[in-house]
Length: 154
Image (cartoon, rainbow, N blue to C red):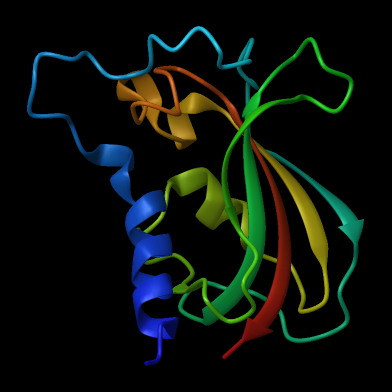
């Protein structure tokens, strides 16, 4: 059985919930005291760890990535709090850049990357999951940190 389409769909679904509100009485976010996070970046910031040499990620192109996401923690030297997601299976995380299927900060943070590149993306809550958060792992108004490797551009 080929799980690639399922995994790609799961990745897109996981990151596309930015504008979705819950149906219950929960105001979003998390009451989980074990989550480590603090502060919120004031703007989107990208830092290239490795500059790639392949094709460039631009709006309208299909890209494949490997990534790990953490809650932003301004008290940590690496700014990483609790890890909330990871997608490291090669070829499983494909999407079209700029088609609003992901949180805005993730989408915007990939533009300009080249295949083979690795980048850290700091995302303010306004370009992430906003005041609603994404219970139970992402509290409302939490900033995010992603490390992303661009593996393919088509």
